[in-house]
Length: 207
Image 1 (cartoon, rainbow, N blue to C red):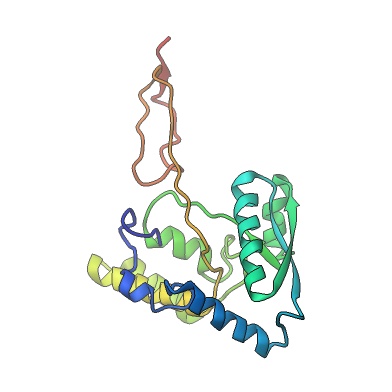
Image 2 (image 1 turned 90 degrees about the horizontal axis):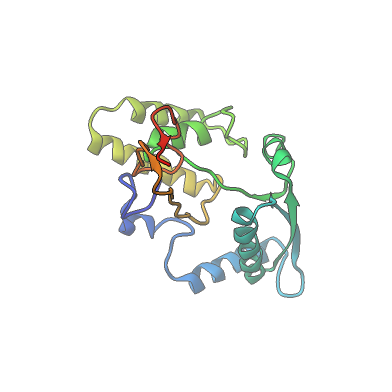
């Protein structure tokens, strides 16, 4: 979910930092990752080579380049493969990649669009093919829960399982903004997402 302070469903830091990949001690995490790589037969003298695919726009290429640089710390050598926009989503749907760095946007800060769209079995945006009937039941239960406090605890439980199962690891969050010229009138700017409020029937230009 969207992190604090903006995210209303953000997992508390003291809980999150105990999960894999969220320990603030980066050196410790890298050392643990190196041990895992060594158990798989890799090390300073034997690197794992992978292709890191991403959409060919700066918003995707820049994080993918940073990812490749970070992977070198645990003896993974990544080569960047850029894919034109028209071919990117079909490539993800086909699961035609070894490693793919992508981005995902949501129109509202709520568990439903994140969890249902991205992690339930056989949904269009479940690009990794992850499927857990147990998790599906939890997602449905949290969706119909009327108590916000209970629902938040359920969302954290789901998020914890996704992190522990390494399902589509979230490696960064981006900030976005909506800009407009002063002559644009009647536009309602949304506070929860730049992907919302795009119906323009009441918008006009004062020129």
